[in-house]
Image 1 (cartoon, rainbow, N blue to C red):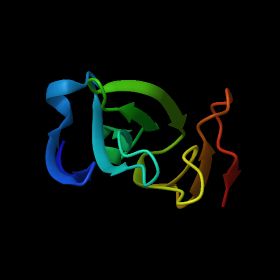
Image 2: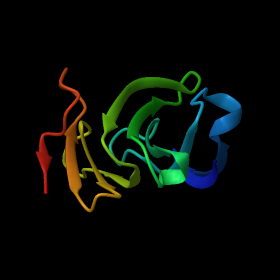
Image 3: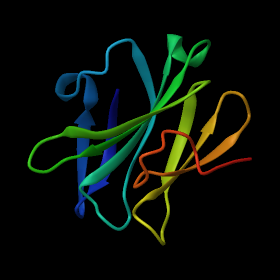
Image 4: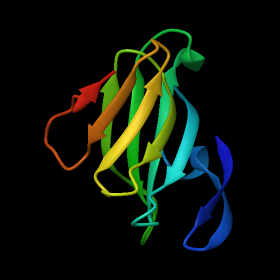
Amino acid sequence: YSSDILHMGSKVRITLASVLPLPDLHHFSIECSKIEPDRLALTSGENYGLKGKGFLTILKTTPHIHTIKQLQWNDALFDVTWSEQSNNIVTTVSGDGSFQVWDISQESSVPKFVI
């Protein structure tokens, strides 16, 4: 997965496969936190999103890219956005047609809300 993103005020091209070991996953969307720009949210799915589980991976880019948290859903996750009010709230949409609201500060690995 390769994408141009706005990171700390600069446009940066990021290639996740070269810096982050996420084997057997296909990545669909990545977004920087609006509040803490060195945090990224990445959505992925198994088998190109056609069959299998989906994952929300929270990354930190300083001092190097590393995983903070990885959450799992029963279908591929295709899009992601951060809350503009809280740095711990992330929303995703999945192949099963649902919309998930995650609180990444919680120990729970299930979404706070599912619509």
